[in-house]
Structure formats: C-alpha cells, structure tokens
Amino acid sequence: MHNGHCWPATCSETFAYMPFLSMQADGFAVGLGKGEQLRSALLKMQKENKSSMSVDPLYSAYHYSHPPLEERLAAIDKAMLLVAKPKVQ
Image (tube, rainbow, N blue to C red; front, side):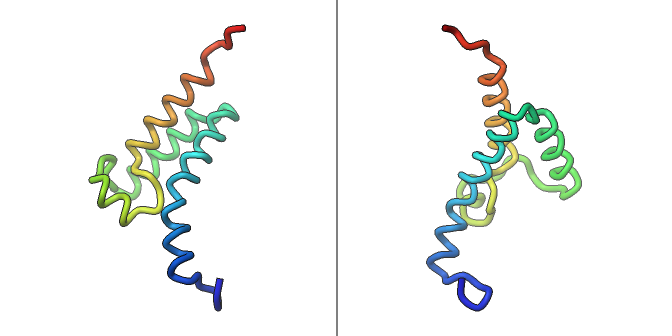
C-alpha cells in the first residue's frame, strides 16, 4: 500500500486473486453447514442489484472482482453434495 492506495502491479495481482478467495470463502461457509443460507443470500443480492446471473467469461474476468453468480451457485451446490456424502471407510 502506498498513501492508502495500492501500486498498480499489486492491485492487478490482488484483483486477479479475488475470485479464488471468494470460492474458498464459499466452500468454508458450506463446510460450516451454511450452504443454503449462502445460496439464499447471493440470490437475494442478485435480485436486489438487478444483475445478470450469466455473463460472458472474458467480461467477468476483466470487470468483476467475484465470480459470476452462476459459477458460485454451481460450486456451492457441488460442495454441499460432497459434504452431504457419507464417508466410506
């Protein structure tokens, strides 16, 4: 950080890393048993913001700091299935 702002190289690296961190945080919430609540909150935010669920991947990669909602919901659903599966020993 420099004078309250990050250097351009640091900003772009951080911005590129944000989608990974979002998905990691979503997985953590699912692990805590909060997957349904997370899904509900994300859908509510999308509705209130009147944003599109499905966006062009290149546009999303350049303009968004978080993965598109469609990707996040798919990852949350997949994680909830993995958490719900009984472990075979």
